[in-house]
Image 1 (tube, rainbow, N blue to C red):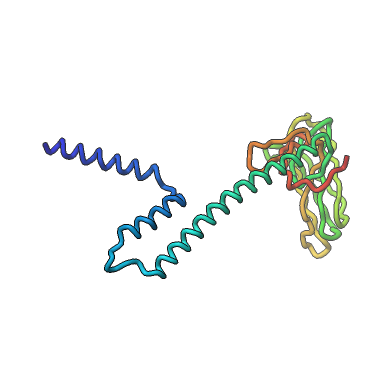
Image 2 (image 1 turned 90 degrees about the vertical axis):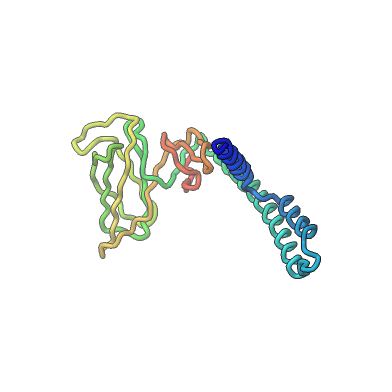
Length: 220
């Protein structure tokens, strides 16, 4: 008998827990039913005060309004994502400049760039391969604003590297006082596709994924 009673209690508890877990969201209908139940079951000698009831109705109105706002925001976010994707399609086939530091070596070259907040007295440029090893070191121009840099795909020993590899540029730019004046680095390439698998669509620029928000110019 003891075993049977224990088994029954365990089953009931499990069932109750399962039922509780299946309903974790309070809907506006549930909220309203709670208020109605309160009125139906209140003590006539100690009824809910008008002030308390008005506060509860206000909470119900706010709850319903918040649900409506959440639904509208979700719909707006979905529409915005679709708009971003639609606009991104227009980039396909065009050559763009985007904020990034990684490019794919293609036809023996890769085009990078960098922006300086003011003129630099010293600009050092290094190129690293996908494993993080430095393959080339040199200098660049120090003009205020945009500066372009075209790498011919050769390492520091003059060896031509194979196409298809990803390479990352690193720029150190300082003024005469030794202060950094580097804003950001860029890559230039042709947009060949769009990836919409994430909430923020990304463009494939020269074989490298780039967020659509990082596109800063269309060159052709």
